[in-house]
Image (cartoon, rainbow over all chains, first blue to last red; front, side, top):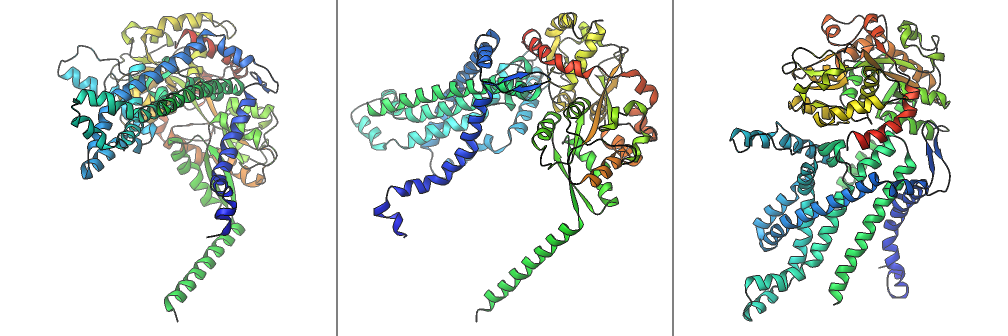
Length: 288
Length: 349
């Protein structure tokens, strides 16, 4: 082993290990983000292009316009809805997964990962085939006279909830599964020996100890929803606008990069606030 | 000694020599010309109609196709101004005119691109700053089984019979913009006074199933029977019909809008000769006839004689060209941000 790796220069080793990653992040992430931040303070005039300046006009335009504020709230609400959906569906699944052993666990694990194995675009078009007015679901329900008219599953929030819930569910399940596996089984035995019933065990042991997994799962699903672009665009279309679709519209269709950058930054900061808040929540739990 | 090690070393050396030889040969013999195109099915057709025959005819030139949409191309042209990496860009009229205005293009001429002389005069641009190699028409697409008789006018979208079964492209897209411009015309108003058009859209709004932005979305909506009528472009309608979907296009009585494709040579290209040859080839009778056959792009070269089957399917010939109009794209693009903002709030919300 080289001498620098051992005692005398111990403090150097972590930096050496972090170095390549840090460099990559600085070059490919922090740099462009700084550039984006700079652009968000510039001006834009249609037909002339970007005007280099330092001004708050883009942020003002966003926050003083109820139309754009409405889109921000709508996006955050969608994030909360998808997160709630994934939590409700994901917890029982994660519980079952953490209890399964051997081949059963491997098969279940693979099934849960399945949504991540196809590209977003292909998967979304798949959902469109299933959810359309003449799609598989409506066709089947109509055929068996369970409904009188096709259910509106596409071109509204319902479809986005279903499609995003499907693709983000694995993140929730895997996070909670990890947390559940970390619970020492002897705790359950002890609780049972002391006469606790199943519900009591669940609320006093399983739920509190899996909270870090629940929180990280929620953060992953929430941020995943906020940054989703293809699914809302294709499934809901222009009728349901989210932050990512208006960023795209400003940047790509209107070439107004400064305003697009300002919206992107607003979204980034909103995510950051929620991220820090949720980390605080788990930290406090752990130290308490 | 270690025979296996030795033979492996020899094999490696041979392999390296082979690689070197190959590299040296390609470096000596071929010019690599980097050109953009719209990608997807368009690219498949372009490869067959233009790239492959061109490389066969010019063995010293190798074409590298990259996929770029118009606005990306514009940004790239600006960025690569001082060190040109992409030699020829494919752009619509608006993008090409913008690039010309910014001084980013290398103009062509009948001398450097002889086939320019064969184009319909309608497709020559001032100073030949770029070459128009195809056009398509903004049309009404309809399901031939469900919509009888065929639509005649943009007003037919307001027919209560089709409520909930139509799609109108979002104003972000070229198809949406063409529709909006035709709507201004239908409502008898001008670009600066769009109120009647927005009033009409507000009335139509509840009957619109969705506002697509991509051609693939419209294709799926028609294929699944979710919609029976939508504004679209001729080449895409014919493309979908060729897959067995019962759709056809019609030029409504208000007329149609030309959507043109141009090839723009980047100013400062290091491979000007090859770029000129490529553009000339794309304008040739042979390439344009093949493009019409594979991707249903209408020819700009007046000497192209289409086979009867293709001719029946796509807009072509001087008579049709005369009925298609070219709006004031410059003004439309200046007003587009306002229109989109208003559209976002009043129509799609």
